[in-house]
Length: 124
View 1 (cartoon, rainbow, N blue to C red):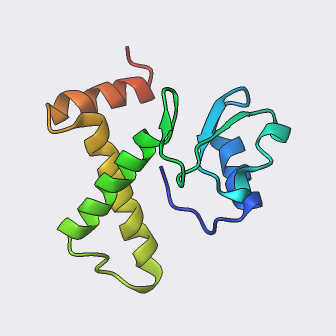
View 2 (view 1 turned 135 degrees about the horizontal axis):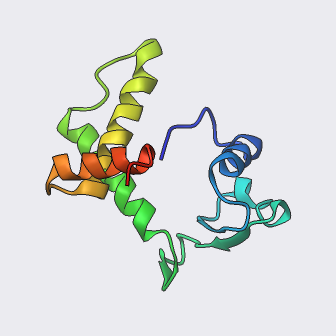
């Protein structure tokens, strides 16, 4: 989960191609920028929010929950405190913190960090 420069199709689709396996099923909301996913080899599943947040595997509940946690962190820190060139970094810090909490919860953070380092450096 990371910030993007804009929500235009070419920006989003290029980021998806750079970060998601080409044979993946991709769950999105109805944002028109995602309409070309099928032509790029992905199996798109669209969840229309005006109908609900999906059912079964075709759902955006996971990402909506994660984003909600990130927004709560922003509220906890009383919004974005920095303006200008460093504001984007602060937003990304909130996103990273939220993803970390979602992955680790409030459990043993040292154990979780060790697991991530071992995975990243193939130490297992």
